[in-house]
Image (cartoon, rainbow, N blue to C red; front, side, top):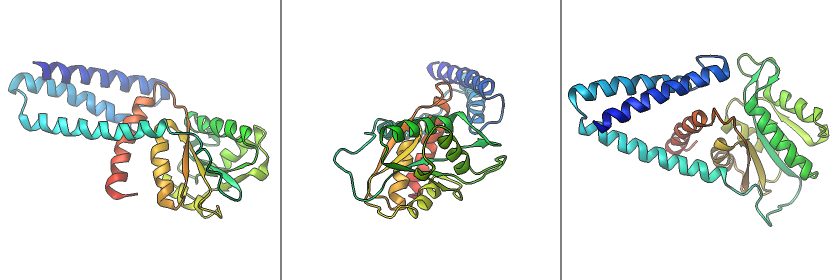
Amino acid sequence: MLWQIIFLAAGILSLIYYGAICIALKKWDSTFSRFWLVCGSIGIAGSVLIRLYGMPWIVELLIGITVCLLLLAEMKIITGMCGKPLEKGATGTGRRWIIVLGAQVRGRKITDSLKRRLDCALAYLTEHPDVHVIVSGGQGKDEEVTEAYAMAQYLKNAGIDRERIVQEDVSVNTLENLKFSRKLIENADTPVGIVSNNFHVYRGCRYAKYAGFKNPFPIAASCHPLLFPNYFVRECFAVWKLWVKKY
């Protein structure tokens, strides 16, 4: 009976959340949102099957394992979100850098997630006038310009000197963001700030180490409150992939 209630409640809540995402983004097939549609359907169908046939022990075991893995990934993500924005006493030598990881651009328009990253980088650059920035991101589907170009224009319009901005405009994913940005920085020992949305900075810093940076540190931007659960759960799967494939 308890499992039936859990499945039914989870199914209903997932469908409600899917609807909220569709309304917020004004589209029904946005990245990962269909996960909640599938979860909702499975939850409701599962509650019916449990009522008819009971709950198999193997399903209970699989649910327990999945929950444990989710919690482990979530702890790592939260740890990354709460990381220090700057390593005290680690100044390194040479020019100091931050890297803003790219996100979707609609035509030429900066999306909400990317704007939050840029506003976070803008605040950091304003506070640290000696720091330079690499804006990293190539050109994807439905993007009229590269993400790097759109980000550079945003920062220039906000008052950041163009001499402080370097564009990395060929990468197509987070690992490439960091690998290609690494080629633009002479000293890998210099602490480098990784700017991304809060749920993403743990993976960004891990990839930075894979790319060869010795001292990456997180600079966490905010995330749209309604979309945070969607991105947070999606990020858990990405972290699992990172752990398994090591990239």
